[in-house]
Amino acid sequence: MLRQRTLKTLTRAVGVGLHGGQRVELTLRPAQPDTGIVFRRVDLPVPVDIPVSTLAVTDTRLASTISNGNVKVHTVEHLMSACAGLGIDNMYVDITAEEVPILDGSSASFVFLLQSAGIEQQHAPRRFIRVLRTIEVREGEGDNLKWARLDPFHGYKLAFEIDFSHRVVDSTAQRYEFDLSSGQYSRDIARARTFGFTKDVEMMRSKGLALGGGLDNAIVMDDYRVLNSDGLRYDDEFVKHKILDAMGDLYIVGKPLLAAYSAFRSGHALNNKLLRALLAAPDAFEVVSFGDERQAPAGFALPARAW
Image (cartoon, rainbow, N blue to C red; front, side, top):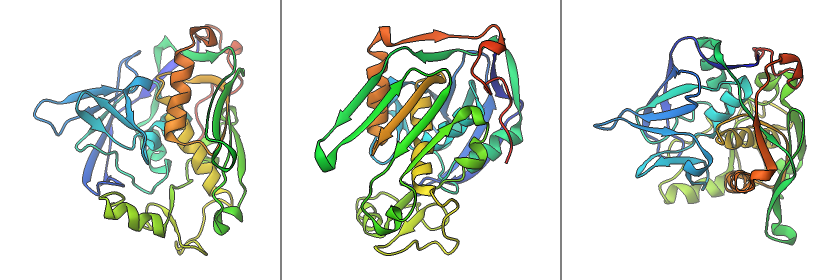
């Protein structure tokens, strides 16, 4: 049987939120089978749980925000991406503010935290959402066109193409495809950082956003070059970060997908719109588990590799 996974023990981190700039403490704790991933605002007089789900996403401007009534948690996608990459099904995320800490701007720190806590299998079958027919969402036309699609596939792979019309970004690879069965999420995807442009950062800060951003947790570019002294971690770090984000956005659906995701200029909003379109078409998917691990897609029964 392909089993669900949780943490062996709890682990903690302290950082600041990318947009709010507020200090935040994060505690990742094991959870029982079928709990899913649940964010818990422990800074409130009465702690409030926010289970991740497609319909819990209430804001997709610059990040993915989940809510339970008036209680929110912003910027969940990098931690969710790490959970998707390592195959974590059940976990509590205790958080002392309304934004997940940005840490180094990638999911690498979250991968380190999860692997430091240890990952253990549970006595319950791991359930997947298997896509049965193509689901696609599109927005805009011509130079403004963007789209995202899920196709049937016995496994999980993602292909993303970017188009920023910026000399630095254009000098790197614009398209990348990643297959989760490679077991190389930590090596090939997790270290890709979020990125931004100086002109946009100035505009966002004038609106009270990006207050916690800087060269230690993002790639920052002016019109001509990368301002970070250490340069890029990957030759194609920009498009790889878009895959990292997409993995986090899609894992918000609550179960791992069996599908091929492809996208052109997509983002948090379109990724959530894609999930909502999938769930609105009951004939387009089914929930499956694998009593015999040999029937599962290649690589899915193996523990995620370290760096």
